[in-house]
Amino acid sequence: MLELQNLSVHYDKVEAVRGVSLHVGQGQTVCLIGANGAGKSSILRSICGLQKPSGGQIHYQGLRIDGKTPQHIVKLGIVQVPEGRRLFKLMTVRENLGLGAYLQPRAQIQQDMEAVFERFPILREKQHQAAGKLSGGQQQMVAIGRALMARPKLLLLDEPSLGLSPKLMDEIAELIGQLKASGLAILLIEQNAHMALALADYGYVLAVGQCVLQDTGSELKQNPEVARAYLGGA
Ligand code: ATP
Image 1 (cartoon, rainbow, N blue to C red):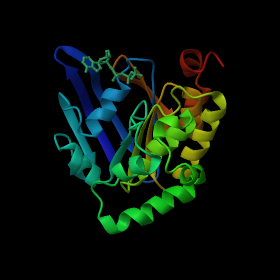
Image 2: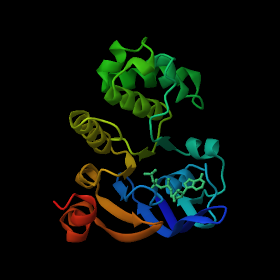
Image 3: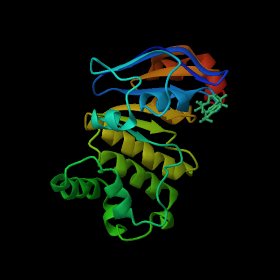
Image 4: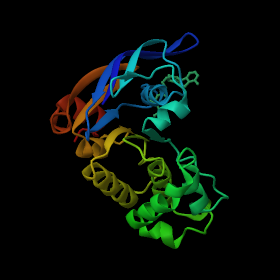
């Protein structure tokens, strides 16, 4: 479904990503783990069309998409939930959700909002409240709900557990598990390797811009190198 071939990203002379290749199959959950500054967000921004790669190619459903605009890429069904959620905090939950549907036909919006409320009943209750008043976990639900409003085929999740308590992290992990069960393909970017590897069919480990390891989620979890570097020695 998504194929990165030898992707590189530079910011002027700074090389953030060097020759990364990765694959997300239909309905698969794939994670990208690595420390701060490893290049995870740069890869994600390239897939979304927000950052032009300096080398390599990105293909999605057989189509070359590097160099396409972010709007074009959203229309193809690749939708991002950005790091830090990026909600409009003074706008209501409902208004924030509506923003995700800006490329969708009007007739569809009400039906899709209803589907989001069914998935996240708490958001129906809080739909008229300012998004900034919600808890961190609920704000993450709004961010995911907003992405679902764009009818994604491939969801890109950038650090969904960031800043959440362990309990809320569990809730978000469960939610991602439900999205996966619904057949959505997911590329999950996480510093929380525990959570990511528990959810992922396949994972890539990134260090200073390069892919240093790749395997199934369960194999990576048992890999002593990964355990030492990313799972707190577990
Ligand atoms: P984080 O978890 O902190 O988001 P990351 O793994 O997503 O880290 P990136 O944000 O992709 O990593 O950053 C990779 C490298 O590129 C880092 O060295 C970072 O300092 C650099 N970098 C990222 N964005 C820019 C930018 N706009 N200008 C210059 N350098 C950048």
